[in-house]
Each structure stands twice: as structure tokens, then as C-alpha cells.
Length: 182
Ligand code: HEC
Image 1: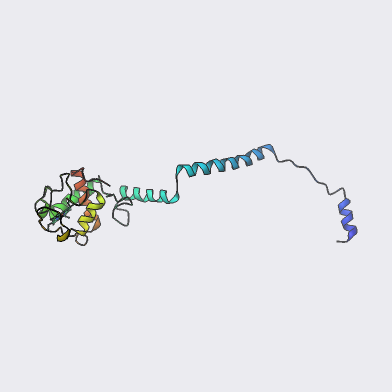
Image 2 (image 1 turned 90 degrees about the horizontal axis):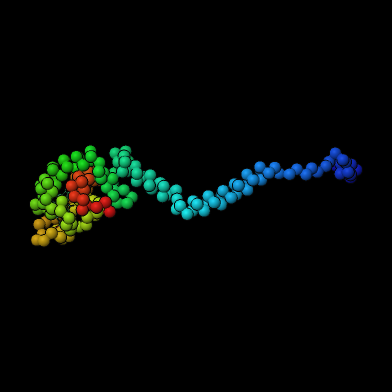
């Protein structure tokens, strides 16, 4: 553009600056979003919510409410038996106990070679996590704590697997409240 053209347009009355004011409702809305953002951030931080926490809670709930649907049957994130209180699992657990464990622990679990499992005395801990470990891995003779020693407790990781062991534990927990979730 030539200088003349510039001057023409620059002085032209066709170009004028309008003073448009932002409507009040818009300013309020705008300010409101900022205030909301700050308040919401503080609230969210204070509530302790995190994506990871929510994920863990949902996985845990699924393990407890729909253990058959979860791909990995095992203790929950908290080390709790997901079959606790599950009637079907308790019934299956009783069957497994009768066929596998009763030989050493007696059908009513009051003990023979193996100790009583329905009293409140525990040699290797009384939480789901500890008992799951004992049943899955067994107790080798040199770690046996019964006095006088009556032999080792065989492992059941391979023969039964986590699901059946947890079902047995659900049955035991149902009979013996001293078997604590954690
Ligand atoms: C060959 C016999 C035998 C069989 C079969 C057996 N146990 Fe045991 N169990 C033992 C002995 C012996 C001990 C005690 C080990 C010790 O002295 O520490 C024991 C210990 C335990 C304990 C730990 C008790 C405590 O006080 O800490 C649990 C729980 C248990 N058995 C559950 C089971 C379950 C469930 C089964 C079936 C899946 C089973 N056992 C099968 C012999 C057996």
C-alpha cells in the first residue's frame, strides 16, 4: 500500500473504534468460573480424592461383590478374603475342607494332627493374609510351632489353588470370628 492509501484509510471516518463494554452477565459468569475453580480445587484437594484411590476402591468392591467375575482370584488389595460372607463360597469351602483338610484337622475343624482351627488360639497368625499364606505354602517341619510337634502342614497352592483355599477360609471365618479380615 502506498503512503497515500495509508493516509486515506487512517484519516477515514470509516474506521472508528467502538467502545464495546463486556456485558455484566458475562463478567459475572467469567468471575464465577474463576471462583468456582479455586473453591473446587481446594475442596477436591481437601477431600483426598485421587484417581488411583478410586480405582483401587472399585477393584476391591468388584473383588468382594463379584469375585467370580474378577480375573485374578486372590486376596483383595487390603489382604482380605473376598469370599467372606459369600454363602455359595462357604458351602464349597466346607466340602473342600471335608475332603482335604478334615483328615488332619477333623471334619468340625477342632483338630487332630493339625491344630484346632475354630478356637481363638493361632500359631501362625489370625488374619486372612497370614492364614492364606499358611494354607497355600504349608508349614515345613522346621517351622512347625505345635507343642509337642505333630508334623508339617502340607502346601495346597498346587493341589487346590487360591480360589478353593479362599473358599475354605470363608467357611472357617464363618465358623470362627477370631479369624479376622486383617
Ligand atoms: C497332613 C495333615 C494336614 C492336612 C491335610 C492339612 N493340615 Fe493344616 N496343619 C497341619 C499341621 C500339623 C499344622 C500345624 C503346623 C505347626 O505345628 O505349626 C497345620 C496348621 C494349619 C493352620 C495354622 C493354624 C494356626 O494355629 O496357625 C491352618 C490355618 C491350617 N492348618 C489349615 C488347613 C486347611 C484349610 C487345610 C486343607 C486345605 C489343611 N490345613 C490341611 C496338618 C495338616
